[in-house]
Image (cartoon, helix red, strand yellow):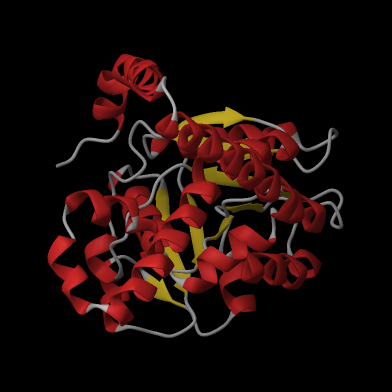
Length: 286
């Protein structure tokens, strides 16, 4: 059954979701709202609404695809005007603080979501209706006694856009993404920060930049509002992962000075090779 969608935040995730909902024919109409209107929104929306309340009243499915700090604010604003028949889901990359906000509105169908997708592209070229195809889309329930029909509808929407719904607790979710998402972002920032310091001393270092460095620092292109939001809403888990990473770096550093480095990287390579085919299928270059 088709639904009217209201998508708040029309970046890569929100814009791609709007296109996917249309392409898969699960949307009757797609309404949208962003921090600032852009003419290109007419390519992905049926209606760009003038205000939050207007969009909420016209929709059955509300999607929050803004930075994490803004998601928390929108939940507080939408909760009091949302009806029981409506569904709200967010797409933020950490979940505990989002779920905490959702728990303030009992009886409403609010769900924490996180699609494991994203590139450094921005603007209209980042919108892709197939962005979610085959990718995990995590779902977290705010409370045990949630409306089951609402949860099932969310699952069907996720499946319809081609993603794979995976239910998980907010606590486990935030532990895992600290390692696989936020730590890589943190390392990327640190590496590029070191590059900037060296660049100030000698600009010739630019000649040594190639695909290895660009790949390792790609995440430093994450918009600051997005990056700061995911770090500051998962500080405890990230700090633990940073401490573990530092220990691992010291271990490898020690092996460089002594015997055993070649054996260590050979073991790591062997494990990485086992996953090569899976990763290449999941994240094709083209």
